[in-house]
Length: 243
Image 1 (cartoon, rainbow, N blue to C red):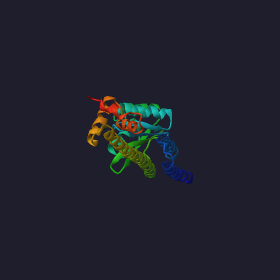
Image 2 (image 1 turned 120 degrees about the vertical axis):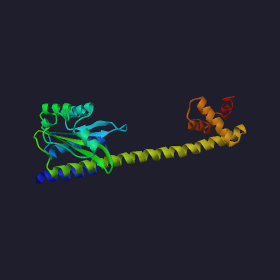
Image 3 (image 1 turned 90 degrees about the vertical axis):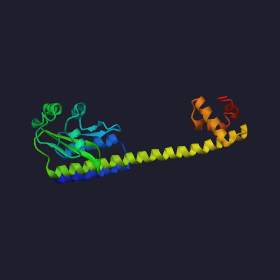
Image 4 (image 1 turned 180 degrees about the horizontal axis):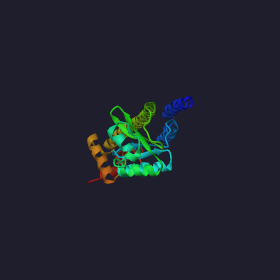
């Protein structure tokens, strides 16, 4: 028991440490699935995540055999993981022999692979569920309450890590897009001034000329503007566009 508690503590520390380093989702979840096998006396463990279109996808598994079983769950849309994701609640099947009606394809395949019980926990933060953790055991029976609580806590930490990473990535992307938009606007304004001066136009007319040349030549507006500023494109070439 002491060894198990030590491993559980180390796993939480590792999860937290991974979140503040270069975040690799695959490595992160692969480590978690492997640790769950050791922590909860599971034969196999795996994780599924939901993609941008709302479809569950295999994210990590403790072995190739588990990967095949999880792919079977996805193919037939049945099993503990899909159920945990849909309900947002833990799913426990004490004996897979009693689940052949509920999960005909998955239960049969899992039994054939030597498993007798299945358990799944939702990867959930407040009202958002992003996937599920799958635990298969060779012995029948439910997981003890303490194991369920510990497994859910690990799953919750993983969920927070993934959502934090996603938010940071989206924030970085938004910042990059905003900076690009601001930088582009400066370049375009400079080009408008140069075109207006060289072609004796007002700035609105200069922008119309710039935009028309961009469309006609299938080039980005900012690239045309940059070419005007660095004089690799003569303003006079824009004046004949569309005429």
